[in-house]
Length: 242
Image (cartoon, rainbow, N blue to C red; front, side, top):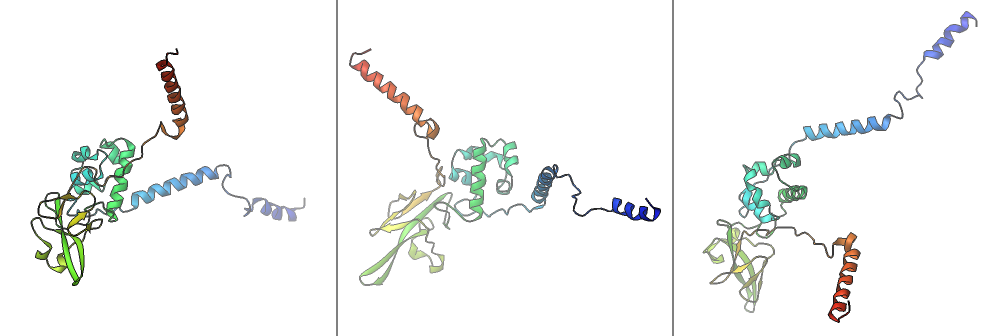
């Protein structure tokens, strides 16, 4: 090759090609997954912790909250030194505290998110609560000589709706007046003199779990078959056939 052609040839040999990827295509998925994992971890580390909601009159402390949501979580109340810790600890920290099984942790985390967003159970919108007890009484308004409207109203214990100003009246959701003086609603207990009492109760806000019937879907056929065999055998024995 002539010397005049050597330099252009060397330039073509060492010039980077834009069409050739710089990374190994076989390792690209693994590197991409590693990069994604690192990015998620960095975002988790740098993200601000969820806000801690304020207690409400019906749920003033940790023990009451765990009592209301049920599933035996009340027994873990001593593990949370404060209201802030209840709503700040993540799943790993809850596991270190000994909150088991995992479904209990998931249940608690789900209810924390619901509480943050204002999704309460019965009594969550009450204002007048004394030591976990609230009273509801009937407030009657005459719209006309023949038409009266009645509402269930939350009042301080021992008070009547007439004792409160209009702006202080609380109309809790889920409770209504049936007839002339009967308030109906979840966990409403009649009290002497009219009205009902609502008291913090274990599992009051609990999301009830379903129960397996005949061993659940996977074992149902087997369980029912064995039961049928046992019943037929018992009938034969009762008739004297062995």
